Length: 272
Image (cartoon, rainbow, N blue to C red; front, side):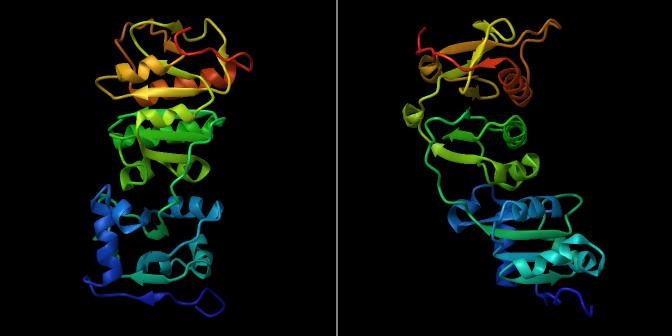
């Protein structure tokens, strides 16, 4: 390994405290809230974090990953406070995936954010499927939405499944989670709710920009109280006759429509 990154510390004990901590984070979606750290599994997520200047508390390689001399992740070791390698079978014990990643990292749980009143936003109202939440974050980042606000009852934003579905989008967004609906009073942009039952047909009228798209529970939709806070309800045309779209698909459609058809101008008040 002469001329390459220093050899990471080798850990071989299954009950090593660092590895035990990672297992708890990988197995429990809410463990990051108690431990104050987040586990990123996979070179894509670790690379996305580093690209945004996130500090790595620990960088963990499988021995097979470290043995790939030309791999780009060799250059990451000096950027972590601690770099370790573990046997491949031991690395697999840190993962809940059928095909475990080769590289992972611990980062500090991001500092709790305050709501930015003027930011284009997505509001998640008890969206419970981690895959849906991660996909929505990915769409938000892709379409230039700066802020995602997760109300209580929404899947934990920094849980492993949401992180994997988000594919690095977390590091491009302002994330506010675990808040009550009353916290939305801080927003100074209009709220638009998605509804399959009525309201403005998407594509038939200009949309306010910036705004906050409200996306509701997979089965129950947006709560009545939160709907009452919204300036408009928006319906996605579905000529194929389906009752409704998956919430992540609906989010992508609405965010693209807002990008393509949004107009800056007077902001409607709730109830108008």
